[in-house]
Amino acid sequence: MSATLERPSPTLAGPRTVAPGKDSRRLIRSQLRAGWVLIAPALLHSGIFIVIPVVFAIALSFTDYSFGDSWAWVGFQNYSDLFNDADFRAALWNTILYAVVVIPISMAISLFIALGLNQKIRGLAFFRTAFYIPTVTATVAVATIWLWIYNPGSGLANGFLSLFGFAPNSWLSDPGTALPSLMVVGIWQGLGTKIIIYLAALQGVSRDLLESASLDGAGRWQKFANVTWPALGPVQFFVLITSIVGTFQVFDLVYVMTKGGPGTETTVLVLDIYQNAFQALRLGYASAETVIMMILIAVFIGLGRLLQRADVND
Image (tube, rainbow, N blue to C red; front, side, top):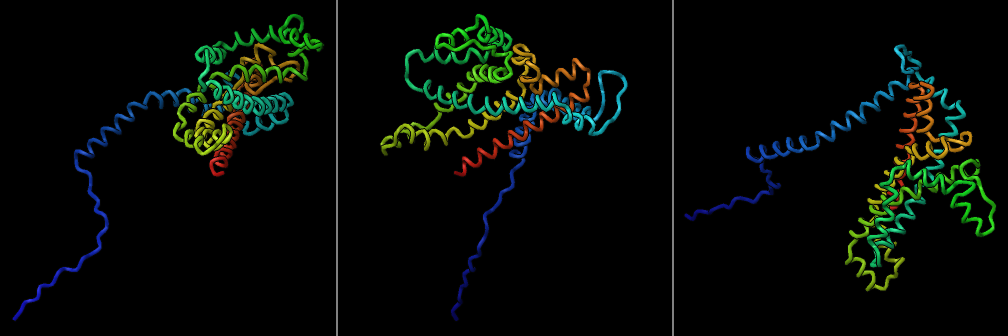
């Protein structure tokens, strides 16, 4: 008799999963503990100085609290009163207009300057320092300098325009030029930070891609549109977010230069919040303004996110 040996039929087996050993689990737990310890100071800071004040502001916005011992729950009355308040509507409009004008113009100018500073030119360190100085200068000092520039009698602005035969203008007391004059200062002061961020991003653009585009016959504009601009996507969004937060929180510049005048032509949200909270002592009312400002900032950031996604998809 002859015995027939049968081979076991092959079976399809999935990938084997190996459970981590005790040493691996212990290492993962120790890394998690180390991570929580490292971020604990930032979490503590955010909780004390951001989360708790935001929660208190939202709660106070539903009351008539005014720095006294007595307060009452008024529900949405503060919000209803706000939108019937002409001063608030003016501050809201001025803030939105200020942001809509200052943000895109300052970003465009900063990117243009950063592109120039990214080239090999003489005095590069000097120009980088000169553009960044306004950012680290106290806003009160900046406002004082521009008050002199806008001075109707002896200011530099009218002196320059007189060379071309233009009549002198009362820049900060004229309702037609007061807010645009502040916009110019806001754009000028905010250039430095944006330029540094853009410059760092430009230096990280792949040189190999730029050289490949040059070998393919691409010009400067084609290299910028097809190589440089896509690489700046995340940086653009970061600059946009910081610009939105900064422009909506503008206060000291307006307070020093115009105090919201003439009339309410340059009154912005933070200035109106300050006046209601610390001058009129209407803390509940001012808290409602703060909540609306936070919602407005979130809306603008959301719109910026949508624009970034649309740009990436294109």
